[in-house]
Image 1 (cartoon, rainbow, N blue to C red):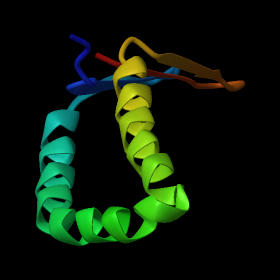
Image 2 (cartoon, one colour):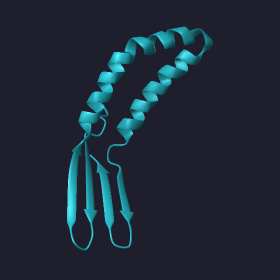
Image 3 (cartoon, rainbow, N blue to C red):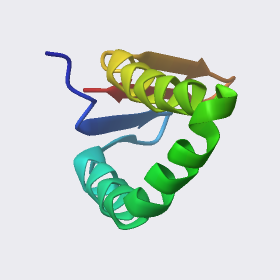
Image 4 (cartoon, helix red, strand yellow):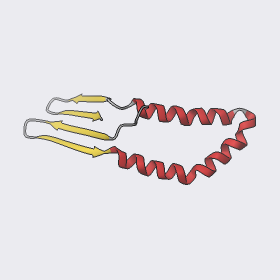
Length: 92
């Protein structure tokens, strides 16, 4: 089973300092899950109304694909280099 990323590590390097920050992404995902559960009856109602036209199946697939894309983001690394600074962002 694939899990979404739980931490974001941001590291900034320049001549004067070397700064790193760990941000718990799982807290943001928890708030998003609470909103999703709160709006779930409305989402299900819209899907049931749109099902006969074929859009309901598309909406269910869009939700599953969005979750799969979030899970696939785990391990992503972004390196940004400027003249004086280097910024590294990693999803763990």
